Amino acid sequence: MPRGRGDGKRWHPGRTGDAFPAGPERSTFRLDGLFRGQGGWGADMAEYRIVCVQKAIFPHGHHITAVGTGSVPTYYDLVWTVGQVRSALAKPIPDKFYTLSADGRVRATVSAYDCTCGVQTLRSHADGIGSDNLDNLGPCA
Image (cartoon, rainbow, N blue to C red):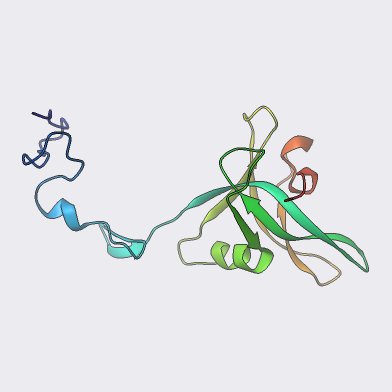
């Protein structure tokens, strides 16, 4: 028999270890990425760790054209174009993209950046640590 959660709600008594609570809480998550919060149905925010980058040469230098996201620094699960990342950052409830330092302790937020040469790209916020700099990440190969 599963134990209670401690907040007065009971787990569904039908199966041992059932992850679905009994009652209306069962239907709060939907397959289309929306959840029911206190304000009604809203979009869920996601966080993605950028582990590699793809760059291209432009007349005024190198710019990031795509990034790879994943949970470990040596492997990427998905490749996102800069346009896809910028769209995800511009949603009403924006997704978050970040990099981690080599030791995994310092996190740098990634944001959209419009270069003075006119290229729309991405950059990480300066924090004085080079290993979490978006420009210093290895290529997605």
